[in-house]
Image 1 (cartoon, rainbow, N blue to C red):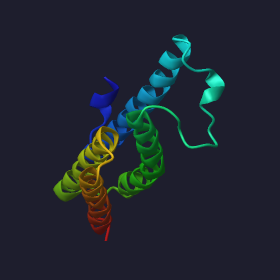
Image 2 (image 1 turned 30 degrees about the vertical axis):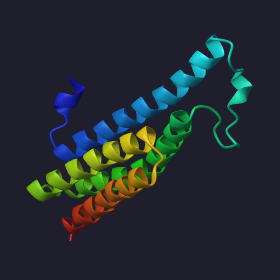
Image 3 (image 1 turned 180 degrees about the horizontal axis):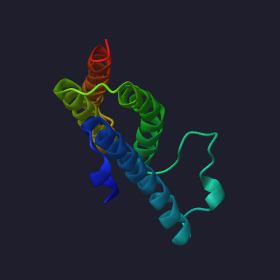
Image 4 (image 1 turned 90 degrees about the vertical axis):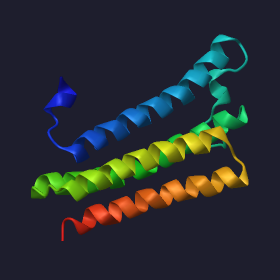
Length: 141
């Protein structure tokens, strides 16, 4: 019902980005909880001020989560600026969707592999996000 009350695509994409962020952090926390529950780690084995320890996919998941944390406020600011100023257009809707799809694809690529090819693909998805933000900002001019 809440989602239905959002009457514009950029706001829906923002909520989608928040949901994606929650999924990423759930994966990170879930891994830690399982390790602790199985007696394979202590809660103190996951210090916040050190590089993550664990399986390679887990270390990449932590970095993907942190990267999302860094980028979500920028997208939120651009979406909210449009909402406050009353700007709405099909182009704005499209670029908000491009941003969200690129964000999810970047995270999935990051978690799945640390290869040189995956890193290049991941960078392409990041470029898609930057392009989408620039194009969204153009709609406000």
